[in-house]
Image (cartoon, rainbow, N blue to C red):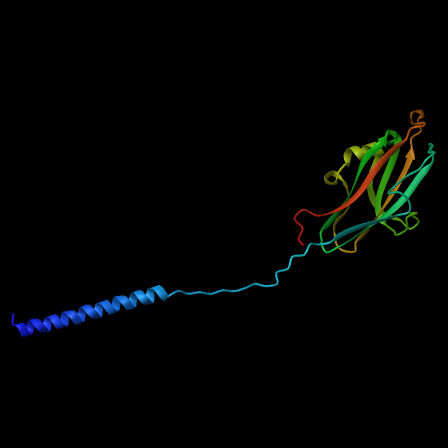
Length: 196
């Protein structure tokens, strides 16, 4: 091959080699700097707990109390339960547990649900019976919230329910001089599956 032609091919080869090197360098440079970036902020995220308040208005102790009881003496009391809170779909239940004595075996108790705002029951209007039996039965069957008597189901803020309790000592000599004490609890919880 003539030397002039060889020189031309060498020149073309060198030019092609340099061009390829430039392309590789440019491709590498563009690949290493081609990075996408984006960011967003979600500010002012607020967490706040719901509120629940249960009030019981009663003229005396919750439900009934008394001393010097005798057969034929009827005790009566009304309680007004009010729910306030930011949660809806609330269940209110009553439970009872014996704390002292054994008089609960000899004391008959009736609980009714209804309307009325006076604790002396003078304006009470019944909507039905909640419980009828001895105080010992109430304690045995409804000792905690899960087994408690349902006073109101799926209520909302401002709802009110009234319960009338009436009771009497049984006519039996076994009750003479016997004392007893129990704890009645009214509790509100969000119903299963409720939504805030």
